[in-house]
Amino acid sequence: MSLVDVQDSSSSAHPLLLRLLETLTTCSKIVTETGDFPQSVLALVEFLNSVLDAVDSNPDNECLKENAVLILAELHQFISSPSLDEMVLDALSFGLPKAVAKFAGVSDKCREIVESIIDYIISTCNPRDMLSILCEVRSLFAALLIYCFALKSMDFAGI
Image (cartoon, rainbow, N blue to C red; front, side):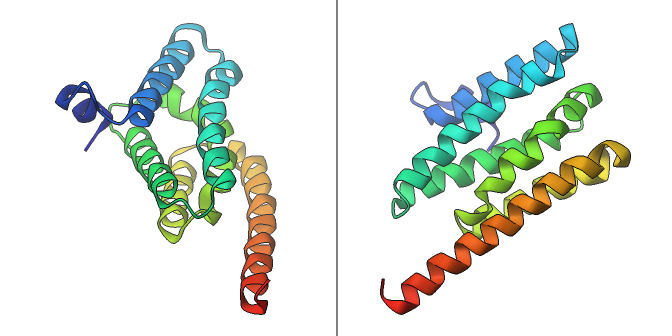
């Protein structure tokens, strides 16, 4: 179900999906009208960080994890839309990989969607632009793997 479908189907639609739609629409408008890439992506990154912060503060809350899955799935659908302006995708490619990579440790489903988002961005954006971004994401993934390994070790040890 797309954000548009959610918005049209009910006034009580999922508030996070509606907020994501609003943020993505604003981001697209800023990029196409002013070309201000950093400012346009900042609101989206802040929104994603707020979703992740909620999950991090309540790691056992399955509802919050499902919210993260919904947001990532909708974001993936948005960026892979054939009607998305290439300039908007280019703008998103500078902040999105690092922002979504942080969700990889939330759940296996989140990790799968994160990989799909990053793979899509890599396959469609300028490789030269992506090099520095991928280096940042790689270092973030390494930190996430260490963190996840530490959590699993603590769990096995009964801590």
